[in-house]
Length: 189
Image 1 (cartoon, rainbow, N blue to C red):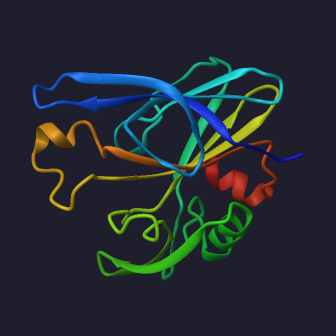
Image 2: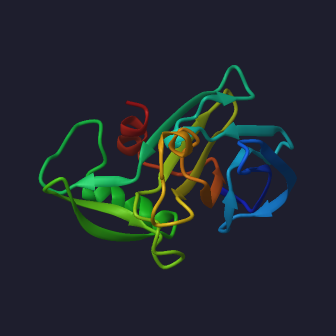
């Protein structure tokens, strides 16, 4: 049965003007903005710790369970092109309804796309959310998050860009999500 995980722990990492990291760890609720959370740690229904580190550009560099498999996909669909390993509009609508997200149509590099939308929280959220699918021997988990820069003028240079977006909005975390096999297969490709 699908279960929402409402709290997680994270260490917030602020980078000061001298390029030093200032960290603060505490417990947070889902659906709030955090400054560079690394790592995000949550407890599943068996009280097992699952730790996910969000890297630059939404990459997942490590997971604390060696036997786990981690997949990541942006929550977007091309309207003009159907690609086997990408979400189509029906997939995206199903996911957005299941996990209660808004969608919007955009034009990106001359192509029509539908993406998940968080501009109602902050207009600087211009990129789609990322769906992280974690699979271990016992359970599966989904974490959905958005990332954005703090200011419209960012990144101002390569030094700032190397750290990636500085704000992350954790939309939700779910244990044993109920997704059709067709969507699971696209996530895993």
